[in-house]
Image (cartoon, rainbow, N blue to C red):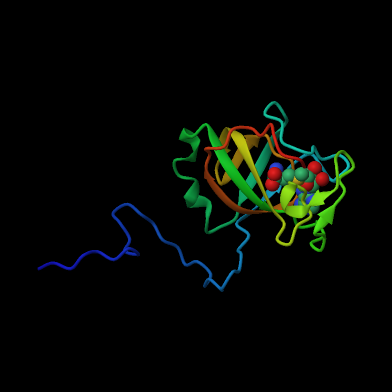
Length: 157
Ligand SMILES: C[S@@+](CC[C@H](N)C(=O)[O-])C[C@H]1O[C@@H](n2cnc3c(N)ncnc32)[C@H](O)[C@@H]1O
C-alpha cells in the first residue's frame, strides 16, 4: 500500500526557497510599500480606489510568489504600521467618539497590523502596483492575499 502524501509535501510545479527559520509568533517583513505620503498628516485615513498608484516592492527570496498575481483584479495587502504607538486601549480619534481600540481601525493597536483591499494596476518584475492604499512611504509589508474584500465604506478609523 502506498503512503499518503503528507500535508507539507511539495506538489509538482511548486517552488520552495531557503526561508528564514520561523520563530513563534515572529514576523518576517517581505517587502516595502512606496507611497506618496511621508507623514501621517498627509496620509489618507482610508484607501481611495481612485487614489494614486503605489508600489509594493517585494524582497528576495519572495519575488517568485508574485506568479499569477497579474491575473487578479484585487488583492488584500497586510502591512505593519511601524510608526504607530501600541499602548492605547481607549482612543479619541479627532473625527469621532471615544472608543476602545478594537472598535476602531486606528493604526494605534497592540500589534499594528493594517489591511487594505486594493485594485491591482500592474506587476513590474518583483514590484506590484496598486491603487487604494493608506500607509506611509516605507511601511513594511507582511503579506498579500487574493482579494475578497471590496473597498471599505464602514467602520471608524
Ligand atoms: C486608519 S489606518 C487604516 C489602516 C488599514 N487600512 C486598516 O484598516 O487596517 C490608516 C492611517 O494609519 C496611519 N499610518 C499609515 N501608515 C502608517 C505607519 N507606517 N505607521 C504608523 N501609522 C501609519 C495614517 O495616519 C493613516 O491615515
